[in-house]
Length: 331
Ligand code: NAD
Image 1: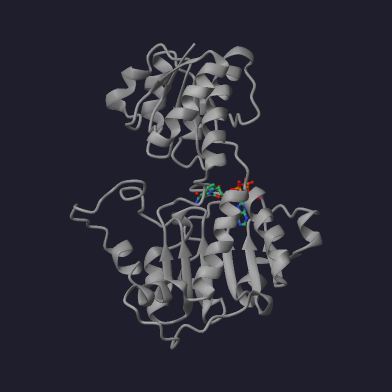
Image 2: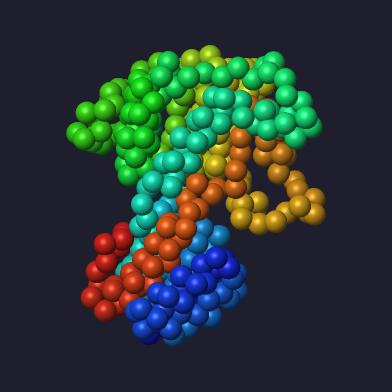
């Protein structure tokens, strides 16, 4: 069985080799994203394995389907780069990743502490032997109300970690979880906005339909939050309106931001753009503030997670091809 893997990073190659040996699948590795221009590379494969740089839109899915490639596994949790409706219509199987939520949850809590303790300006100062304290006073978690939006696998792991800090934890999710309700207080979204000192997002990006949540954090919702609110986004950039974030940092309505993912990040993340002339003014402007910590969509990036991402994509394509079933199959 042939599997064509795209978007393959150097650090994934050893895991792909191990998964190939274990499953007997011949996995062909391609560093570039899967596009209409190189889709021929997938011909003869039982399925394709991709990351978020591969935009599996309706046209590309039709091309794959036309050459008999009816399984696509993304090595990501988020599937907003895949046209799921088109996949359903074509009868294709789409699988996502399955890895422990701990890596993203730990990163989220690290971001909370970095922002609350003014770590970014402290780091800047230390590098030029400025060891002054002025302006670096932080806040303690035990005195804060933390609002968690989305209490799925990552959100509830964040809540579990937070219980050790002694903060008050508010939660909002359209589908409350009884286990989470033992340690966090489910409230309506307006209460969460009004009472949280820090709000962290852990829901999928939904671009269409009644549950669409693009720019759920916008000028209006920020206005309903506490002055000096800290916002953390380790979910998806488009959940937050970038221009509204900039304006509210300038107005000091937002007291700090921890963004592992930011709107319009696609052309930047996971690439070395040091010598390029970048035109993304929003990100360039936002990242210069001392109270804004931004990273390159790397909350997931641990040794354990990468191994799981690769393993499940190879094993999933093999299982779906042979039996039609795998636990990460979404459609
Ligand atoms: P999950 O499916 O287990 O949980 C998502 C939760 O969000 C569900 O409980 C759902 O009911 C809830 N939800 C949906 N819409 C909501 C809304 N409008 N408001 C509040 N809650 C809502 O997903 P997960 O594994 O916890 O992952 C969450 C998201 O984190 C993913 O969809 C992905 O976009 C993001 N993520 C980011 C990284 C990274 O490296 N930064 C890595 C993995 C996942």
